[in-house]
Length: 157
Image (cartoon, rainbow, N blue to C red):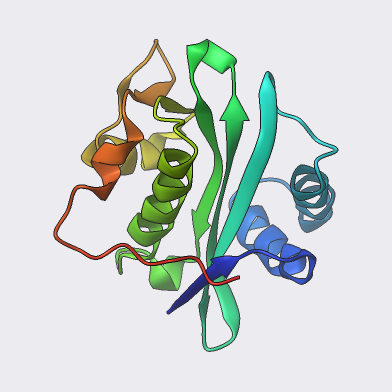
């Protein structure tokens, strides 16, 4: 598995992955391109932002995106994370989360929130997120995600 920063050429694959669970590919093509291009700003979003992909056999099998924010007095927000079903449970999502956590830590953005859907809620809490309000979760210190015995990968650029 290779992990790297996402490029514009990855957007169609990312849109297909996201559309398999909700909305259409066309919707996600526009939304992901706008998010990555900085023309779509989630509520109280700040710059910078990052999108990383997981690639296996030259195919994008997962991705994660996040940005700085002021929402809920957080420093950062995990915006998107998706992994194709064939690669779920293999550690891809965990590695993507660790890459995003490292990016936030490097920017001293430790309080990171996420708007979880129900299936992802267990994943986030297993990795240290706690309830922020009736719906949202937060990592009071996202560096907790990095506290394992596994080495942290670097993001290939």
